[in-house]
Length: 337
Image (cartoon, rainbow, N blue to C red):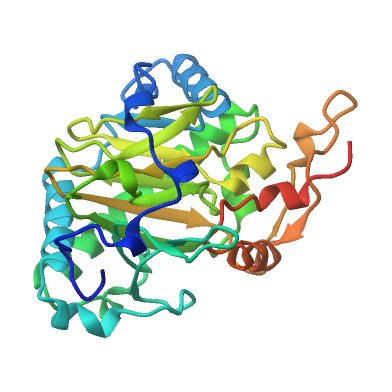
């Protein structure tokens, strides 16, 4: 798909095995994930809502988050314009080497005994940083891209810090605890996702079922098209885009740091027959040398450690070894009960 952004037919290499198909008719009518107003001035009320969302869903949406609406629109315009560039202009970024800093790529689904299936999406990934200059790594075309991302990264950096503080306090920890445990030099990645309209959304997926390997994700969705779905009580729940809201989801490292109290849950992206969809994920996670394990203050006689400590590099190694499958990485670090 990287060579043809808008495929005109659903060729066999995009069709997922029957047991992996989205079964869109069976999506839960549940009223989606919690929506939390960050302008809630009653601290205890806000912390309770965040803690409950992290325990029960691992996902929530935030409104009144402080990132200017016009900036959110500007960066989404830049991302959309990038995916609208002619294939030959995007080709310089295309790679199958997922360790590269800046890359345009596709994800695949692997099933035992079957050919790998290409996901109905195209992804563009690169670093971001709230203060350090990273824009020289980014595309010069569209012209808006570098400027938009530099401004956006500053704002998202502030929001990430606030969210990590609230999540820490929701665990009953000092507000700086999670940031400190994740490390002073976090791994910051941006991933723009493009999902073309699809002739038959029942036969393919935009992104396969997965959890995020990092600590925290801030996601912006394009308006008017639903594609993100999360697991709740064994059923798929659609996460509809809300104007000027971010979707927040916890990654595997928060689940480990919280000793299993806060959840990193499985989610996926489905496609739409009529409309293309764009989303932009900003990832915050440990660096390769950081050691991750349950926070000691969350361990006692009633709450023994669920996970062993590990270097994040070890986690990444296991993650990439499971490429294309339904990754179950954090489970490999669980201690015997």
